[in-house]
Image (cartoon, rainbow, N blue to C red; front, side, top):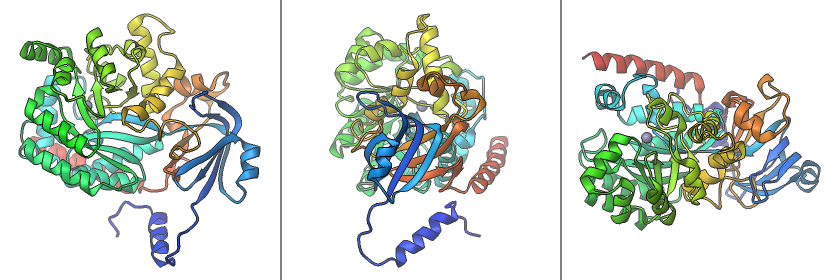
Length: 466
Ligand SMILES: [Zn+2]
């Protein structure tokens, strides 16, 4: 049996491609039409009975269905009159392969969770194979739930990239750099060398944006962090880092450096280039001003902040300061147990409301902007992703509205953010290619991936008893 998780359709089309004559084929054209299209363009157009025309990997036209059908005759079609069509959702912070550790230790304090469970489980199990299968499982779940782009901070990023390409998803994949020996690097210098090699290998990759991910200020030296920034800028790639996630971390760093993590990192030049700062829960007014001035993007992770009781991130003041704040799920091994951006949108709105005791603090429209437009800006692709608009890359998601939880609908933003579920996602396009059709993955073999994840559970449990 072939061990590749590629779906048979992909293998067939691959062999056909090999047999085809060497002439440039006309780019595939698609018309995606839906009862409602939330474009998220500058005018925030909401189209009833609207359509998106795609040519190759780009959106070429958005407008009324009848007009688009007239102009793009002969295009392949996905017509869903009982659906909302939205831009692909962008997960700005996760650790994808930790899917294999899902639920290994819940309801623990962060330090106990890390030291008693996660570090031992990772030390005994994380390998290239673990990262490959863990990322496949994550991609399967993410794509079926409407996520088209994800931002990863983990190990063996070449294998993470391999899984991401097979899923047909877009990945901002950050090689972790951390101040102690880990599965794929004995030293930070080793991790930096691997990151550079990864940058080179992904230079022209259409779906992979390689990145460098120094874990945090408290786990790296100034020299290492500055070397990470230098390398990221040399290759014009993003730097991903955790910032002020917990009060304890923030207080410890303030004691050590006599200023906040944000001010320390800014002073060291770590924010001088595209930066995705995860969490930023404990950021005060001056930190927010600095993050805005340095154009740092924030990955807000509401589920994680709630589950680990990290605190209320000041998302509303951050947005008001002009900072791009995207949404993230964080890892699924205890800080969150799934990769559900539909849920994160809902929670982002509700968490901000209860934090400020103000039901108008963060409306549904803003929550969807965070998962699309802001997410695109955070990862440095603000003009390419995040909206259904001519000229942008064709990442789009259909969400069914012919389900009990979405009927009746008075406002599509409200339906989508507060009522729709990840399971209502029916079809997903990334880079002009369909990867999910009628709720089924077209690129990944679900049964095989689930079986492998179950066998890893056995292996992980046994390893922890030794
Ligand atoms: Zn994280």
